[in-house]
Image (cartoon, rainbow, N blue to C red; front, side, top):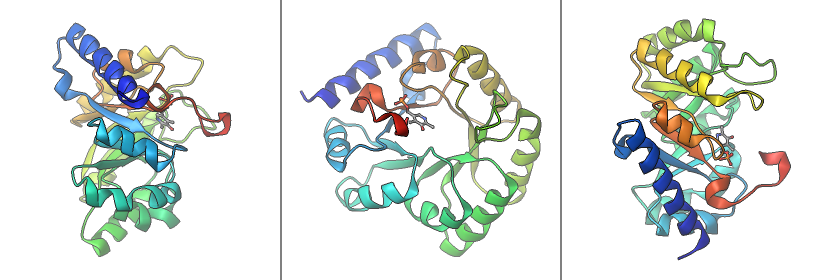
Length: 224
Ligand SMILES: *Cc1c(COP(=O)(O)O)cnc(C)c1O
């Protein structure tokens, strides 16, 4: 078994264990393998091990890495988990199945306009800045409801909420908060949990966990 295959099966074991603890079926947890900075060969290794959902944080990097894989692996799903600039909206809509980082009305308008022209729209999640950090992307908790409403009014396929807790905080408070907010807003998907804290996220109701280094190994520090 390859190292990536071994890592994937270890992550699945953890998902099973923590889902069971929380009394949920592990089928309700979607594992997104975050392959940013890793070469296409690493993605292929994961695909061969049965992993079908991948996450990337840059549109341009993804354009080089995935289009030719889609032909061989039609079930593959690609998720954008990094910030999206409106000048990249069109490219992102063409490439991704899910966008986790919707965080402002301007971006919603841009997605509405370009998806109409394209005739398709990925599923969308709104990124919430649960720690209210100045430097972090995401909408402030107090503005989430308005942005949800606006996205729905634009008839876009809004599916859930996403967060990245502050590094210095225990993640559980943020995860619990995001899950409650999603429930209140009637949004079925909750994207939370990374290599260091996905078990907690599974316990607290994540439907999508975004795991990179625990599957593909560490990255250079600039691309964490
Ligand atoms: C890189 C990244 C991840 C994965 O991080 P790991 O700690 O390597 O698991 C998850 N979510 C987002 C938004 C990321 O940018």
